[in-house]
Amino acid sequence: MKPIMNRALLSSILIALAMLTGCATTAPVGEAKYRLSDFEKPGTDAELDISDPLEPLNKSLYRFNYYFDSYFFIPLVDAYQFVIPDYAEQRIASFFDNIADIRNTFNGALQLKPASTGTSLSRFAINSTVGVFGLWDPASTWGLQRQDEDFGQTLGHYGVDNGPYLVLPVFGPSNLRDTSGLLVDGWVFSRIDPLNFEKNDLDTSYYALYAITTRKREPFRYYKSGSPFEYEFIRLLYAAKRQLQVAK
Image: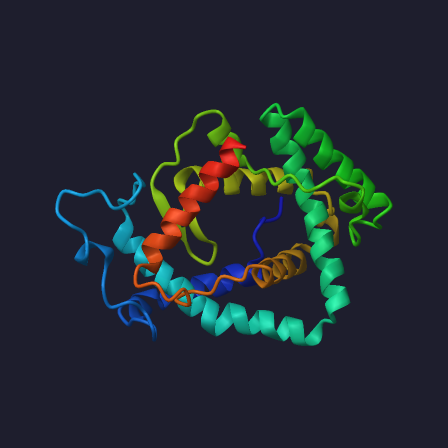
């Protein structure tokens, strides 16, 4: 079985991680000079109950992600947008959305959600045929909207706690439960192998293009929020978002 992560991207991550010690000691331009704790009143609870025992490491990784994003990932995305016509970008994004419906179907079924499972399965069937391998999305125009499900949500559905907050290199905000879910989803995808990577040796190209497309569609940019408490704010937003996704 071939590795599920793009080897070229993994190599870049490892090289960048080797630079982390040096990068983490120098704050990027525009980073806040103060911490939330500088403004908290004694005896008050300013945040939700989010476990972050690895906060120093997480903040270093958050800063590492800023450097990785600014000097590698975003320039790569910009180059991709410059070279690839908008129409082709839309077809590529639609293709990846169609592949993601495999994950959505699998996790919807595990959560015993017949409506969500049926919608995701129908979307995959329609878009893979009428939509020509998912390059177009007729299912959405027919009222079948995407049902975003993942194994982290499945674990949460059955009462598994978030665990400690984590900032993953490149991937960004997560927690122990969702990181485990990410690994399981990747393993299931590699076992199903819908694109037959075992024989066509296209996994590197697939994951590289998937990473670029995913980052292009995410408008967030590190240290651009204007908040002096960006790390704490993003941590809070992530926890709230995942709580809503699990509850739906």
